Structure formats: structure tokens, C-alpha cells
Length: 283
Length: 302
Image 1 (tube, one colour):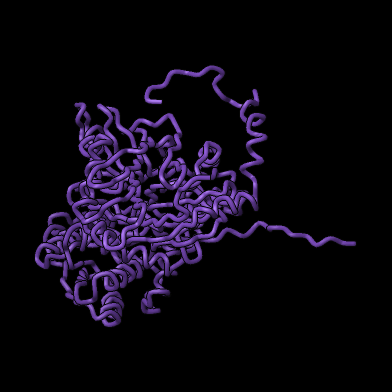
Image 2: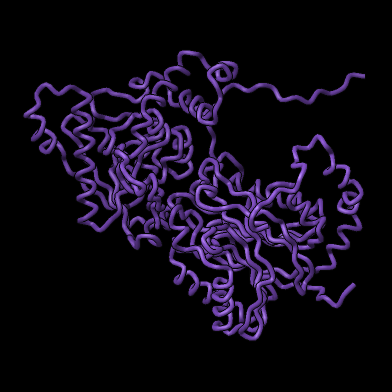
């Protein structure tokens, strides 16, 4: 008699999954707790880029606070792709949230005219930090809390401008990999075009995230998920990843820990803030 | 065996405290007590860190209270809410003359007076990942069981209940009801319908209930603390492992259940694992290959 075989075959590496309904319920509760209950703030303001991250954030905010309390700000620079504005408008129309467009070209160029040699990286950073200036000023004007739109993948890879994209005090999607963001976007009903288009920081013409990073999000996320758990490079190779892509991802993570922390402060006392004097953020 | 009541009407108060605002949270508990006093339960159970929030870091030293003071506050609040006789179990940060614990208390309230039946100091202080308890707190050194008018009980604070040996010892020592005040930050979204940490908790508690034939009363803290969402899910599990009731994860609420305490005997008769363990316990624990101290060592606050 031949016995049946029950076995689990090694599966090809896959990006992390998500239960979008559970996640949505949890993140909506998070936003309500952080804004309404803890801070007594009823409104949210966020930069709406035309990409999927800020779109998902807008959808979550609209669920948590009501669309009438969500203020989207589009902040194009003169070289931004015109389609970004149109894609952001799809989100505004789908949710019926408030939206304002504030050009940042004059503000950015007002400074950069004195720095004609600034290359693409510096110019991109100035744009990102200018957007944050606008967002926080609109926050004060509207009595609305700025909401962060950075995802876990870009946070881990250091693919953001420090003290710009990462600045808002509340971020509902910062523990979600990009692959999970896409799944969540499909569940929330984000316009299909935003889910399908190539992610881009839109700081330079024809820029895409995956070209900048040198790896696809699906691949990077699959590596990151296991790397964070503690799997060694050798184990990751055993699991079907290439040594080169592992090195690329690990290198970016290991070289950007500083971007995920507050500034380093010299400790001189037994009451150094956040070293000895420890109070939680919500105390 | 005794004239103990056959039924226990329990109410779990799934609190969502404002961080560090003890007086405000106690007042809100009082509102819930008033709601309960109209149809009073026998026992009210509150979560771990029920009236302060869980992640306090150094602020735990500002907020920890002597057990007697916390017991009095609970009793006074219940009495002012119109309540008469009740037992209350709750988690709190305890200040014992300058030594700090994550504790669970069992207080008997009657006629405006209170008696502390038991204080359990959390023995397993999670200090890994997001948790940092042992940086700020001392650990308890004794797992005690205690008598109540409803039978023998034990309090296991959160991670205490996750080590299979702890419910085992509580049951061996006679506990028929395990009270588990807890504060569990939710995590794990690659699941099907629930956060993975909620599923894991339920599975662990069900196993303990089935193995030892005990009721488990699990009171979970809820609300977000600095982005970490406590998973509530307060529940009552019967000695057969059935979930009698389970609260939602993310909202403050009251959970009520009526326990038939005779079920403990029935469950143990049908699956006498606890009785079997009595026979083998010595062989297991006196095994000289176990990494146990050979002599009783001195430890404070045993």
C-alpha cells in the first residue's frame, strides 16, 4: 500500500501579506484615538502627492474623521509631473474632501537662486522640506493635525528626507510595507490608476522609486520582512534571494538607522532627556 | 462540599484610560460602576494598569500607589456609585514603600468597607521588544492562591499566564478560577479576521482552561498608547475551553457573564488531567536534571 504524503513544500519568497479589513479597523481606531480623544483635534491635513501612500492615508482619515474634516494640500514644484495633480484630484473627487493647491516653486527657488550649483539631491531635499513648512503652517491655520504618509519600506531604506516626510506627529501607515499599502489601497477603493502607476518621489523628471532604489518593492519587502525578524544573509539565500539584492537592502537599512531617530544629544547628567528622564509620548 | 454559591456573576470593565490621569480614570470607572450597580454583579474585573495606562516609563513612580490606597479608592468609588456588596479585581502599579510592582489586587467590598483578599505581584515582567517592564519595576516572587466566597482563585498578570507552568501551579494549589488582568499591544496583520496577537492569547488561555478545568476571566486594556493599540478582547473561558463571551478589541465596554461554578468539577471529571498531574508532579519537579536551585534562596517579599 502506498501511503499518502502530507508535506509542506518550500514556497517562493513572497512580500508580506495583510488582512486589509482588520488593518483598516485598527488604523481608523488609531486615528480617532490620536486626534479626537487624545488631542481633541477634529481635523487632519496631509500632503496629497498623487501617489498611493498619501491616497491611502487620505482614505483612512476620511473614514476616521469624516471627509469634511480632511484637508488635502497639493504642493507641486514647477518640474512636478502634471499627472500628479490629476491623480491627486481623483482622490479628492472619490472622497469629497477639501483640497487646496499651493505652488512651492517660488519658495524653493527663492532659496535655490543663491545655490545655483545645488544638485538633484539637494534640490529634492529643499522641496521636501518646503512642503513640510507649508503643511505645518496649514495645520496652524486650519487647526488640523498634520498626518504622515511615509511607509515602512521607505523608512527602512532611508528613502525619504529627514525632518521632512517623517515630521508629522501621527502616521497611520508607517508600519506597513509598500506591498501591504497596495493591498490596503485596493480594499479601500483608491482609484486604480494610483495603484497601478510606478511609485515616484516626483522630484525629477521620469524618476521612479524602484529605479532609484535598484530593486522592486515586492522584492525589497520580502527581504525586509525576514531581515527584520533576524534571518541571516545565508538563511535569506537559502530562502531564494540573491546575495546582491540582500546586500543592497541590508546596506540601506544599516546605513540609515540615524534617520529613524531624533538628533543625537550629548549626555551630561543623570536626568538626560530620553536617556534617564523617560516619559511616554502620550503622558 | 460547602455552601458556596454555585453561580458567579462577573462583569469585566474593559477600560480605556487617559494616560497617567488616575483621578479622571477612576471617575470614569465610577460611571461604569453606577451602570453596574443597577444590576450588580458578584465580581468586577479590571485590566492590568486599568486606571493609569500601561506604557508609563519613568512616570510609573509618579502613579504607583500602595495597595491599601488603591483598594480604598476602588471601594469608595463603588460605594459612591450606589453599589453594596461586590468583589473587585484590578491591575495597578503598586508602590510598596519604594519598591514598585505591576500588581493585581482582589478586594472584597461590603457596606462601604473593603478587605484586601490578595495582592499578586507580576512575576514575569516582559522586557523585550516593545516591552520594558523590568527597567522600572521589580518582579514578584510568589504565586499565591486565595480563598473567596466563590472558591479558590489566583491572579496571573498578563505574561504570568503565558507560561504553561504558572496556570498549572495555580490549579495544583487549588485555584478553580484564574483572573488575568492584561495589557496586550496588538500586532500581526497577516491574519484572517483578527490580529494575530489576539488569536495567540485566546489559544493560550483556552489550553490552560481545558488542561486544568478552570474558569479564566481575562480583562484586557484597550485604547492606543503612543501608536501601540491595546487589544481589549476581554473574555470569559469556561473549564471546557469554550469562550463564553469576548469583547471587541478597540473600545471601552462592559462584558458580563454568569458562571456556573459546578462546571469545574464536571470538566475535571471528564478530563482528569489535573488529578493525573498530582500523581506525577513530584517526579517532574524533583527531577535533578531541571535547572532548579538546590537550596531555598532568600528573596525579599516572598
